[in-house]
Image (cartoon, one colour):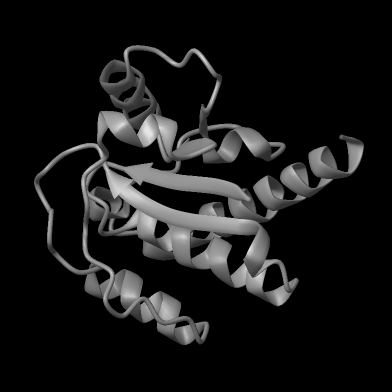
Length: 155
């Protein structure tokens, strides 16, 4: 089982979008029993709040429900529970490594590092460009899944 935790600042926009898009990709391939996928925030600002309405709308347009998802905060103990921590931007990466006291097992990375255009996923909370974030996250999740399946075949 591969355990993935997507991480962003508040866990109401980018990381839940990544969580549910990745779950959909995995389900489409019939691989649900091989993955555990969740998301969390680096801050406590939105804890308990639902996925932000524009993100819910984008997911709903794709036939994906995120009902029941509320923001949760990343904890130090999570380092032992997950295999991968996928941040949306460099600030998330910094915050995760600070919380974990580093990254001794090389579990922390950025989502778009798995694509041919590594960079941060812009935060649509500030940019208001939810479609751009969706495109980047979709591309990143697709590349991440391909990377994981390729690595699994070679081991």
